[in-house]
Amino acid sequence: MLQETTNAPDRVLARADRHRRIGAADGSWETSAADILSGAGDDDQRLDLVAAAFYAFTALAEDDNEPVEVEEGWNSEWVAAEYEVGTFTTTVNDILLGARVDWIWDGRNFQQRGNYVLHASVVKPASSLLDLNPKFARTSAGFEAALTRLSENKPAVAITDAATAVQEFFRALGIEGGSISEQLNNAANEGVISQLDRKLLKPFIDWENGERSARGNAHQFRDDDVTKADAWLAIHVAAALIVRLSDEDPRDIERLHEKRAAERRQWALEEEARARAHEESNARKTTESAWGPPSPYDDEVPF
Image (cartoon, rainbow, N blue to C red; front, side, top):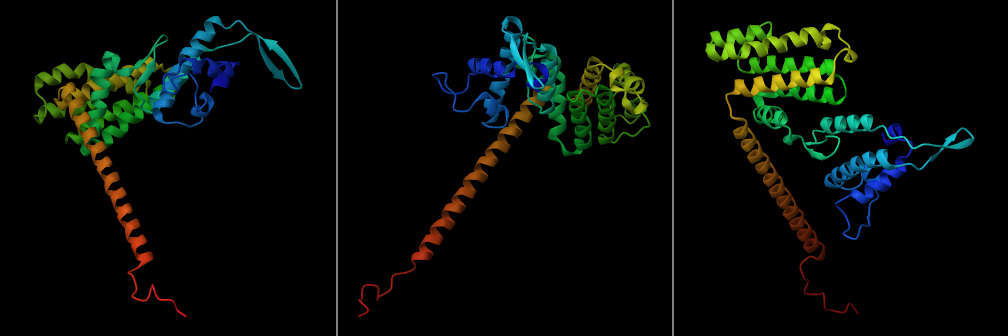
């Protein structure tokens, strides 16, 4: 991807090494930037290098006046260094979103998406809520698909998936209907939500429903007809509706999600310890079996 956004990728990697924070204290690195980007190292090292590459790329775009030697067939020539900052930023942020990495480059700083109010208060709690309860599996699949399609620069598909997630959420609550608007009315009639809630949510539901009809790919709209801003708005509205319909406080959702995650990590550690103890026990038994019990004739000379 570096080769597609700059004609001086080696300079970006070399400058990135100067911005890395995880590694040797003396500034030397056992694993090069190129190797880490190719899969070496752990997740923390890779994220650290991504941040360093952002800083390096934007800095070089501003101050790199040295020409670059490029090859054209059998010949080579010296040209000005080029850095497509906008394309690089958009592409890497999309990759991070697709991998559900909770960090983003805002043009100046590498920061957690949670620092963005809508992400922290709406998107993340909605994703956590759906992950916590198996009955929301289909809703979760639709919502996560919307984020994935957005990361793949397919905003029209993302809008369709976001609206589908809301529809599946209603179905998980036992509310059927031919459209999201119809499901909202049925939810009020069946007492799942109050009439006051119906009036409050109706404008958002109508917008989400209309956005899918007007811009979703289910109605033959191409991705180049729809912007990422359109898709993000659809996702934010869907997430807000899901959190509101769940009648849960976003902070409580996140606390429960963190608790469950901690429990899963503890369980994994305990499983690893049990497996290790089992292997050690088997190894001891194998060693004891190989030596066998002492024989009364072991010390006798056979001649």
